[in-house]
Length: 114
Image (cartoon, rainbow, N blue to C red; front, side, top):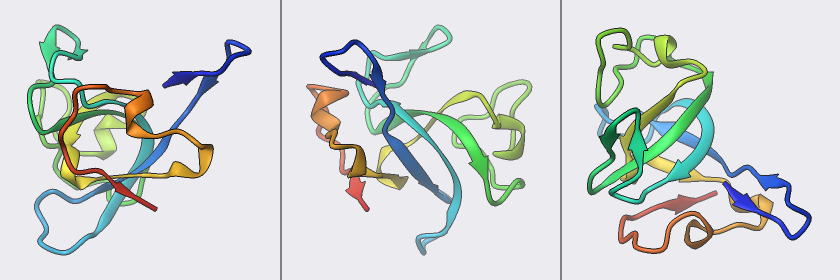
């Protein structure tokens, strides 16, 4: 999230595409956090080619998460949680006037804009 001059947070919404499908199938929506490889979810760094997102809306509850945990196997179980998702399967909504550069400075991943 970026911060405005007034100190309020700007949320960048995003859509999550099914990473198991060859076609672009939207399986959920959320908030984009980062693509910095050293950004951590829990104690685990994202690593290359990953994006951290908070899942807010699930359109396909049985879609597999990219990196399952002991308690989260499907996108439906990830509702409200911060998870890793393949960065090339995240579509950022740039209507808020933010860019990935406002969230990450060293990213070379492909991010699609609506």
